[in-house]
Image (cartoon, rainbow, N blue to C red; front, side, top):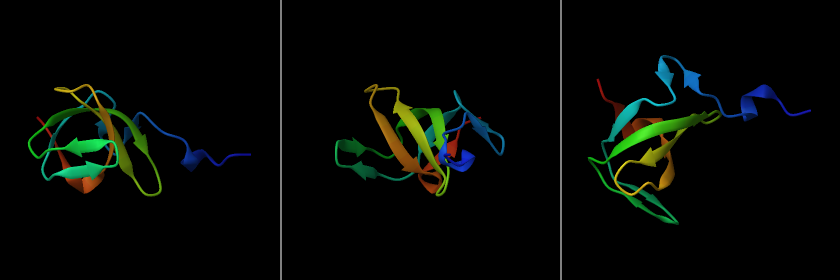
Length: 74
């Protein structure tokens, strides 16, 4: 049986799917880069370690970013 903390969630500590974030430092992945100051939308939250699965609004590409790489927009 899979433990519940291995699942993705839609909300965690006041952050919810659909919230907008601004990338505060460059993020690199094998499939591409997410530049600083990009605007992204949270799709899901991964746990242990906590990371955000986000979608770039400009390119429609998805990335998994650490929590400290983005800042929630008002």
